Length: 67
Image 1: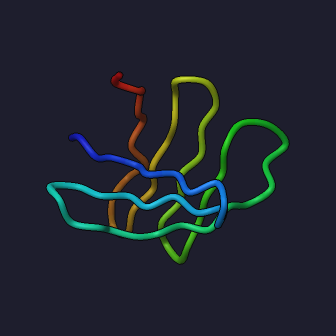
Image 2: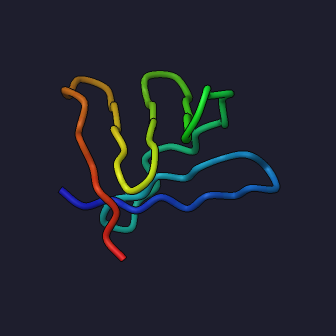
């Protein structure tokens, strides 16, 4: 499954899109290290090129960066 994340550092948000549709715009949290964004049942955590996306009704998805 592919999805895209657009980070907005000025507003401390991350917009998650899949197939051209925005699933959610997450608010930045304060992680000990790495990244952490959350809004409602959506959550994105990561460090380096690895991340985990949690969406409603689905098990967490382990992700890697594709450049």
